[in-house]
Image 1 (tube, rainbow, N blue to C red):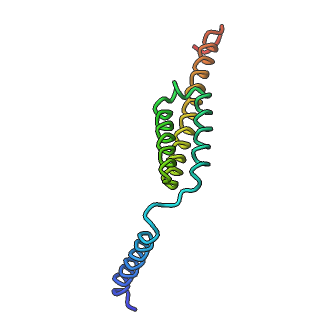
Image 2 (cartoon, one colour; image 1 turned 60 degrees about the vertical axis):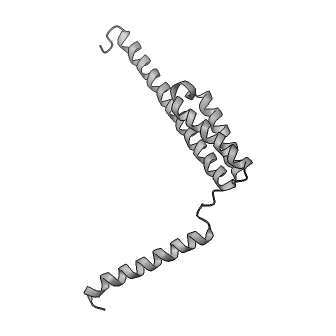
Image 3 (tube, one colour; image 1 turned 180 degrees about the vertical axis):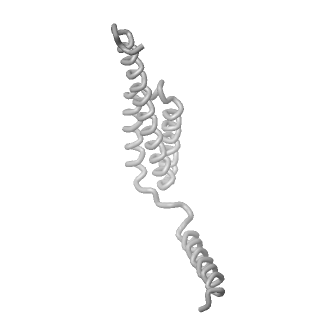
Length: 128
């Protein structure tokens, strides 16, 4: 096969593969399988509690609000027997809670660092 014909052939094969993949997705259902919704929501509840204990309600309020909203949505989807959607919402709530906890820990660490620097600056002969 000449080099000049290779480009259109590759494009045709790629198009056929893409069309086959799309039809496979359509026949299998458009929504991905996401796992066990009960496990996902239980994990999210645990992570939200951990984030709350780390002070995320005040230090990462937006992330905590998102985690709680996604957990509530997961619970609604579970009651409606939309297990894949419930599991995905549960996983999203867990991710938000993990982020909220990390943001709260970072904020607390920055406050502690600032306090330590202020204490050090207050010492005689310390950095000014």
